[in-house]
Amino acid sequence: MLCIYNNSIEPYFNMATEDYLFNKFDEDIFMLWRNDNAIIVGKHQNTLSEINVEYVKEKNIKVVRRLSGGGAVFHDLGNLNFTFIMNSKEGFPVDFRKYTEPILEVLQKLDIPAKFEGRNDLTIDGKKFSGNAMHVVRQRVLQHGTLLFASEMKDLSAALNVNPLKYQDKTVKSVRSRVTNISEYLKTNLSLNEFTNMIMEHIKNKYSDSELYELNEYDKTEIQKLAEQKYSTWEWNFGYQAKYNFNKLVKTESGGSIEINLNVNDGYISECKIYGDYFNTLDTEEFEKMLISKKHEESAINEVLSKINIDDYFKNISKNEIISCMF
Image 1: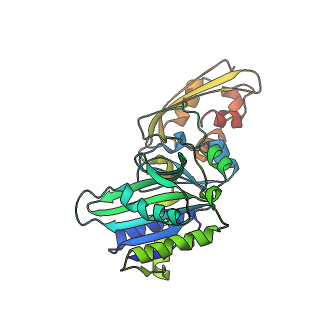
Image 2 (image 1 turned 45 degrees about the horizontal axis):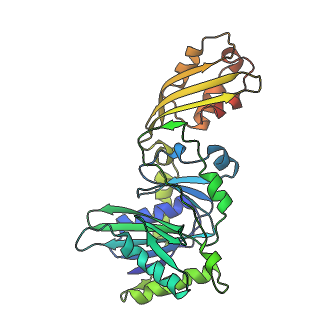
Image 3 (image 1 turned 90 degrees about the vertical axis):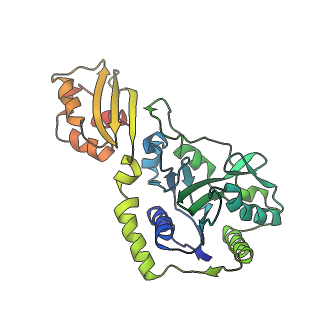
């Protein structure tokens, strides 16, 4: 087994690293890594319905889709991630207990009463500190999980605080749980680096064929290409399989209201209908048609609005108010 300390904290690069190792290597692999502030969404989720768009924009939080299914999670530097990439030689390869057992063994050494609960979670006193997800192609398995060690819980909550009424779709929804940090249960002081090394040493002892592997320059170059061509793109992170109906009502500063309804397919607007008690000199239907086939993405909408006199269609309503009504 190759044991990797991935020292990058760049979310696009790190998600590309998992993809690269899964598809380009044949060996079993264990990797420990961290992301700077990011939201990682499941492969089958509608990204916009999982994130607090305003907060994500304000805090400059990156949003990245991963290979595996399951729900959206918030990463920061107080969260440690672990990844197993294994060749399953027999039986059904989906086994969350198998790949979380080493983590529980480390926590038991620290006298922390952690346990496996539900379908794929690790908890302490009923509070979740680790969510796990899996990607399987034939008999090759990628299972990864979060380990909340000293994360900022207020950021986690705010980044994933979404109004569920805005989006109507059939994609996988995240299940919010009460969460906690491992550090709150430590009997003695332990840094995140020390905790990271404890896990790696435990894995090296548990798997007799283990050896440390460091990503070389070729690996890093190929991973960066994948990050740029896939994991940093709107098409992968927001447009991928994004089919939903969107509705939002906003009270404007002028005292009126505007309601926007969108049908979106693969991230592109296919239908638009606008209601409200606003005044206008040009027909709103003309404006609705301008949005058809545009990305449901702020820069694309902003480009449309920059080419027209908004006051002709929505008297005394600003461009920012129109944009805020669309996300």
